[in-house]
Image: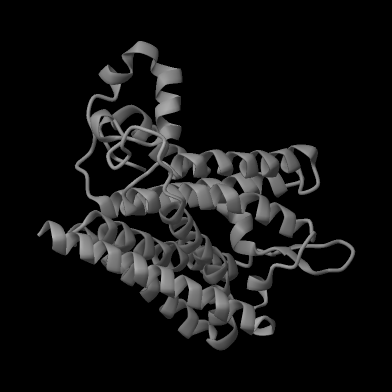
Length: 305
């Protein structure tokens, strides 16, 4: 979550109505392409690696991700710190969250959810047990709500709603700010929340994938992503723009997941070996944008230094 004081919340966002279309679009696309690429990497690892090698590789991936996030604390420049936190966080989530859930689900024999007609796997075992982590997510959120003064719009809204005029008294000060850690935690909490939301919506005990509320959730997230992007357009600095893009992309990706679940379009990233050209194009554009943003961050740091 964005750990900023109230006075620095709009840093890099000068007054006026100037819109930073290139910065917002480049940041959005770079973060957006991490979604299909992340899915594809998991599927390719499962396809080419034997079970033992897969789990060791996944654990190593999570460890490398943690090291990258920590390295970002010591990096120079807001943009580069943000990128360290983002890329490290993606490896951390894939290796130490998704693959670990997969490992224990398979180890203890959790069965996937199957389509009653076709017999195809609808929900993989690791995602079926992920909603059990809801209490842990709430535990972290309670800490953010009551103990941190920060720049996250979602948390600030809840603090104003719950604490009224005592907001500044209850959440009196921010944590020590390290941009890499801020980016990492923002990514972790938003991804975690989106997975929980989708899995509860898909569960027939609660709603079900074809329930009207599930469709409304997807529609609401789609509309909400445009409002977040509108705020992103007014952010002048690359680092802050990338961090806002994380929220924009994850919220925007929710209706994509809902539509894919309903088989309204083909999710090419779930079958990368049969869509090599498309995935290569996504990878090339992602790498180009990542290098460009890293270069801009390095150039700005050199100018400041």
